[in-house]
Structure formats: C-alpha cells, structure tokens
Image (cartoon, rainbow, N blue to C red; front, side):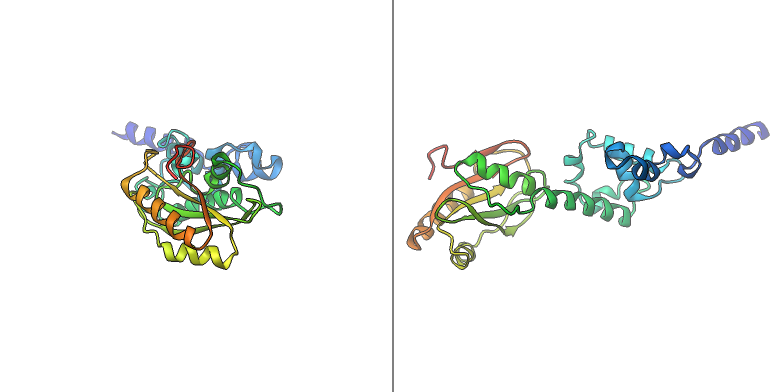
Amino acid sequence: MNYQVIMIYTDEIKKLSIKQWAENDRPREKLLAGGCSSLSDAELIAVLIGSGNRDETAVELSRRLLGSFDNSLNLLGKQTVRELMQFRGIGQAKAVGIIAALELGRRRRGEDVSEKPAVQSSRDAFTIMQPMVGDIGHEEFWILLLNRSNKLIRALRTSQGGISGTVTDIRMILKSAILHSASSMVLCHNHPSGNLKPSRADMDITKKMNEAAGIMDIKVLDHIILADTDYFSFADEGLL
C-alpha cells in the first residue's frame, strides 16, 4: 500500500508544468524567440488558454482539444462556448478566448482592402465571401453591393440565424442597396451542413429579390450558397 502511494507521488513529481520545461519548449518563449510561425496550432491555442488541468499541461490539453476536431481549426471555429466547455479543463473564460481569437482571424481574412475587387463571376463572389461565412456553424445572409463597373462597394450581413436557416427581409436589403447607390448586387448565404442544394425557401427568396430589385432598377446578378470549400451559383445553373 505504501509502495503504491510512493509510486503515485513519484509520477506526479515527474509530470512537469510548462514553467519547468526547457525554455525553447515553452510556447510563449518560443513565440517571442521565433515568432508565431514557430508554434504549432496546439501551441498557439495553449498560449490563449494559459493553463491546463490537473492531469494535462496547456499544450497537452490543446492537442487533445484540437485532435477531437481532426486537427482542423475550421472545425474548431464552428464550436460554441457550451460545446468547448464539455472538455475537461476548458471553462467559460478559455472557451470564449478561443472563439474570440478564431473570429478575429476570420475577420482579418475578410477585411476590406483599399482596392475594391471586381465581381465578374460566381467564383469572384465566392472568393470574397468564403473567408467570412465558409466555416461558421450558423446560417448568415449577406449581400455584395456593386457599382456600375461591378466593383465591390460593400459586403453587408443582412441577417443571421441558426443551423438550418435565417430570416431575410427584402425591404431592408433594398434599403441598403439604395443607401449605398448600388447598381447591382449578389445575394450570398451559407449552408453550415455543407449541403449546397438550394431549398424551396432559397428559390423563393431569390425570385422575390430579383423581382423587387428590378422595380428599383437594381440587378440581382447571382445568388450563391457557400460551404467550406465549394459553392452553388443560381446564375451558373440558369436559375435567375
């Protein structure tokens, strides 16, 4: 009995905290010495959460967390605070920190550039929108407002909802288009399920938007449905 207690105690001593690791193996020190690129995804997450739990260091916990989502930051970014808190050692504060960091990365990718891109095809619209909605876990509806040269004036989110749908207000979309003096627009929304087939509701809103915008002399050039790496274009399929 005493021997078992000694063995357990010895094992706990052998388990070093991150502060006891060699300096080059500590994620914060590695970042300071070699920059962000020197850290793995798990080590970057470990910097965010700061600490592990009784049985795991922050790095070990981060590896387990990331491994549960096939080591995919895209999949990790789709989780909610409640879902992340199911992992032992991830409390509310850590879960919020992870989600906030991934959202900042998403916004950085989608940030407007000084030279507004032209939208000449469905692929152009997908390239603009994928960083913003391609990997999120709920549905959002956006519009790309374009000038007479088909250059982007602004990308606007008009609504967001749950996993299976969102409410689209035609009047608010037209109001935004008029306020920004748009000559045309591209409708965009994501399907978190990855199924790109348009629903009956998708077909109906496309038809109504096309008719309503036409009255205001604003063209609806396309409606694209996005997933992680692919998209469906109403214009390409002859549905406009």
